[in-house]
Length: 107
Length: 122
Image 1 (cartoon, helix red, strand yellow):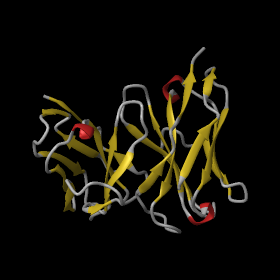
Image 2: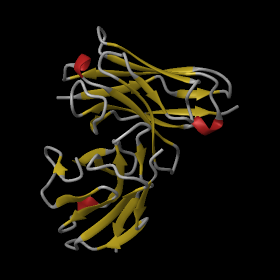
Image 3: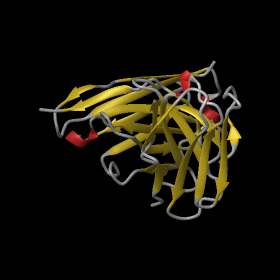
Image 4: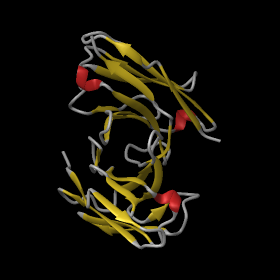
């Protein structure tokens, strides 16, 4: 199975900050990487697929990059509604696996 | 608009069974693969199972293989998860999720249901 790791596990940031979250796969997954945002007591929401393609309706301050084993999610200017937990997921092969999550909270 | 509505959760004793349902609307259900994903209280997301658009392919996480069965009824636009031999560690919110790309085996998810809570406890 492909293992996914994320760093940091949590971070504190201010509105307007640039935030970067890293995700690493235990083996190459090409660009079969997705990012999801989850707010407390809510279902996850799709942000990015194919490592760098923005899901329809997602603000352009979100961006993704990477290929192979190393990926990043960047929020260019953090907004109040962006405080949440972010998960990466590989869909290169079954079983699909998620990273452990990165919680972004208010500094 | 796409809607996925899970039901069937509740409190169940260890070793017993439960069947979850996910009613889909707003898209051509029979064209899309579907998944179940769960989240234990205070924990991260765990993928559970996948079924292809036509029901011909199914994949499971090792943690549920042999105990859980995913199925679908395309005439009723409904996805199911039959859960047998339930354990305390199966306690979680269970989400159904839709593939973004039709008729493929590998896709990310573009829509999720609101989830249904399953609690396994004596």
